[in-house]
Image 1 (cartoon, one colour):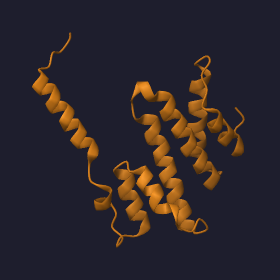
Image 2: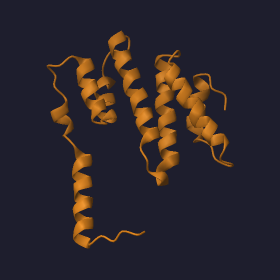
Image 3: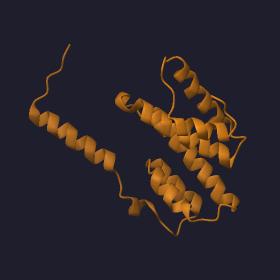
Image 4: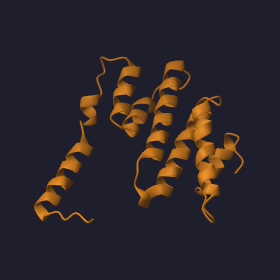
Length: 148
């Protein structure tokens, strides 16, 4: 059964979806008075992974807390990429997910969730003839011990 929408209803839904997807501005999510972990959690909760990574970018990668926040951000970004449905962008999303999970493996080679997600994505690729991740994504996987 097809549902017909008036142009006004369609425009309202389109605008409402756009507004809902915008959420809070990044500047409202970052509170320098909060501990770093709380700032990153707020950004992750609002799907602002690039902002979280930018915030962590200039920090000391030798600091265990910074590494933990990077690992958490990349892991959540990968999961988000996998689970955000837009069929027309599936390959782009899966490539991004693999890149994020590869970064997690660089930070923590023992991260079981990232390892499982990489294996799951690659199993899906095996079922689609003639499809595989981008060459640079495959190279990154090889660098962290995955040989596809």
